[in-house]
Image (cartoon, rainbow, N blue to C red; front, side):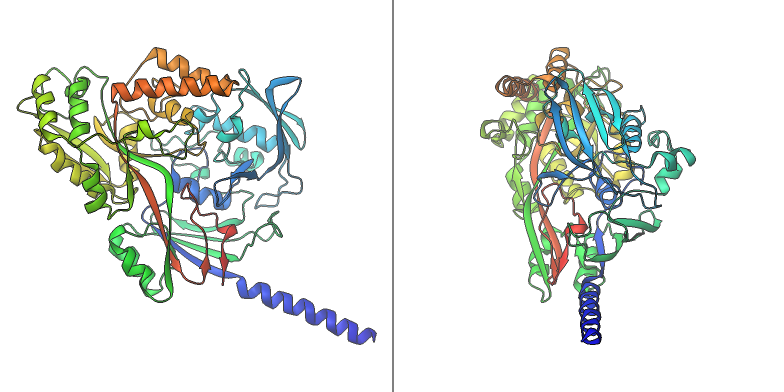
Length: 528
């Protein structure tokens, strides 16, 4: 009997092992562009965060439905006796990929690092006064006044191993603007579900499952290996999926949706994205270099900006360029975001005659020429949208010279303010308007307005933006948000185009819902 019981136990264990191994599969993943760095605090950019989320983890995490859930923190609350302090209880038993135990020291170190001058994430922590270790598994965040939405800001702020970073000279985030390369920009040591095996930027990154991941039993964890291949060419990317060379592509070109969904063994999963696409203009400088107008800046005249807004035919872009896979908008805020309403979103009529009249009134009856900087590997049909805008603005006399580059060369133009007219897309991971205001509207300072390439500066708005961080009366807070949006819309500092729609293509044995931030967290993926 004992022998039989032993054999049965062994048989059951073997069956479970075989079942587990059956789902332990390699996932071959492709998208148009690569991560810009492996340093988790050096870039605030979607594809960079996407790769980082596989390797590193934040305190709080947005799941595949976009809901905030526990990650390295298991609970959090504002203290009753001091509403300026948020207390986080950390998950015990978590180890970094090199085997070191994660504690409060690593959390404090990571957030202090994320607040340093070279960090691209510091604007998410502008309200934070101090981060304190209470004990090995408790951390307090003290803010300058109560901040009811602090937790919304933490979902893309990753925790590093303090000893590893110090040992390898990575105490400061990589200085991307200076062209710096560091140990942390090329190597990793996170707590995430996957570990870095090898990486050749813009060619291939290989990850393997973390055998000591704390989330075993909480997540499917059916992916044993990830082979990530950036493929900029839309035709090549689709061909790789159709041929079976890759299993999952994050950005099926709109012109190929029917082709992919109609092929046996493949499917397309679609959802609205929490991201808006728009053009920014240098409205602040008295003169600009990229135009043919001497001694003044056409974009500084609001009549020119409003004329441009009327000249852009968003419906035509939706139908012709995007094949209906977009939602035209007149505000740089997706509908997911607190502060959005239909009135702000209402698209202006495409009125070339009125736009021409406004150009004449502004003194540009003969138009002017200007350079438009555009990425060609970041957003859905980004270069094609820019090409369409070139023709539309040409109808009102603005001769646009298109300069399209990979995102690695494009984004520094905005950050360094060396472009006068540019495309940008903006996702809102906090799902709140303050995130947009703090990065895109606030006057550029050391800790705010880092993506405000418009040079727009309104001190009264700056004061209101900062006030949002400590306003606990939600009705009053929403009123301030509405006031800011009214001014931003009246000043027409951006030209909104549309909200993106996500189309993920995959083999039909893959079960994976579209995440609204375009963040595929592969620990959730399952195979049929």
